[in-house]
Length: 197
Image (tube, rainbow, N blue to C red; front, side, top):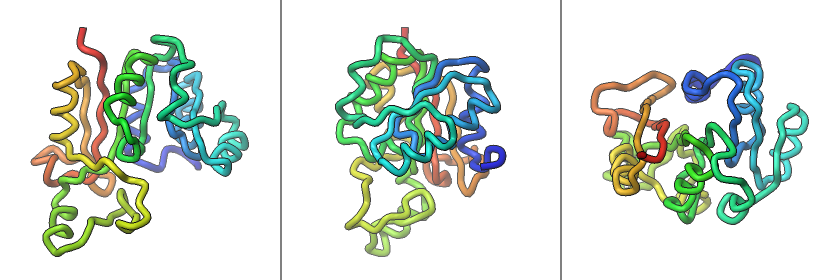
C-alpha cells in the first residue's frame, strides 16, 4: 500500500503520537500497523487469527501474534501499550463490553472503528425489508461475521455506562467527514477513548 489510502487509517494516524507503543486487535493484513510504523515511527504489534493475514503481516515486516481476541488478551500486562486499536472488528465480538475493558486495561487509550448501523441508507434497506449491505458492511445476512451492530449513539451510551471518556470522534461517509446529524448521515464511526479518572 503506497501511503494511507483509507481515510479512517489517516484519522487514526493523526490521533497517535509519534514513537508510541500500539497494539492492533484483529490487525488483518497489517496495513494499518505498517503505515503507522512508516509515518508515526510507532512500535507496533498485531493480533490476528487468520493464517493468510498472518503471512501478509510477516511479509510487511509487521510483528503479529496469532490469537483469538475473545480469549487471548489476558497475557498482556496492564498499561503496556499507549494505544489499543480495534478497527472494523467491534461488531464481530461476542463480548463487546469485555473487549473494550480489556483494551483500556492493556492500553492507556483505545481507538475503535465500526460501521454505523444508524446510517440512513442502512435504515432505508431495513424499511425495504432487507438487512443492510454497504461498503462498510459487505456481507449477506446469512454469511456475515457481524453479530453486534450498533449506532454512533449506542456506542456513546455504552461509553457513558462504563465511565469511558470519549476524547475524539469522527464520522465518515465515503471517506468524507460528517458533522451534521452523524448518527443518521455517517456510515463509519471512529472513536478515541480512555477510562475516566
